[in-house]
Length: 148
Image (cartoon, rainbow, N blue to C red; front, side):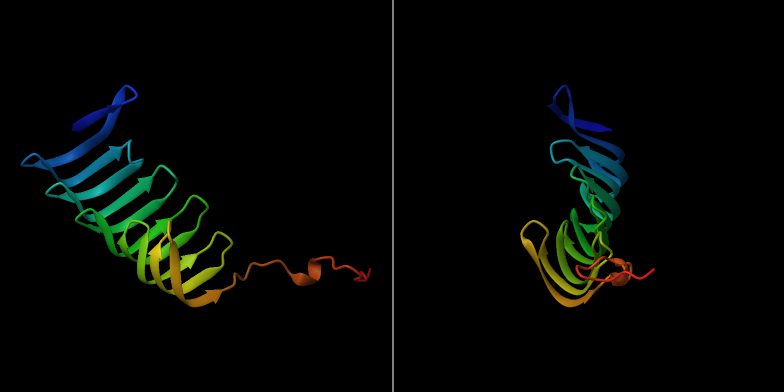
């Protein structure tokens, strides 16, 4: 176990896991209070490397393969409003390549993505409307006559 820094009478970063030559190596868990992140997964030479899960303080969940502490290749992202992305990443929140973004409404965007969640996404693909939309006949329309 390694603890560093102080934040409001507690440690700012805690790592619990395997070590090799004074660096995280193998499976370990890092809780970084200052970054607002918790990582659970594999480490190589002190870097997130291999299969892992990252959860952020603002409710984002990332799962996939890490390389030099970056999420790369195929992965999964779930936000606090249940928006789901399954597809290619080049880093946390940076979507790059083929994937499917399923909105909390159930609507989907299927295609090629580029950009970040913070700065905006460019999408080339297909919008698929959710099949669970309300039946238009059940809505009341102005001037509509209801039959009994």
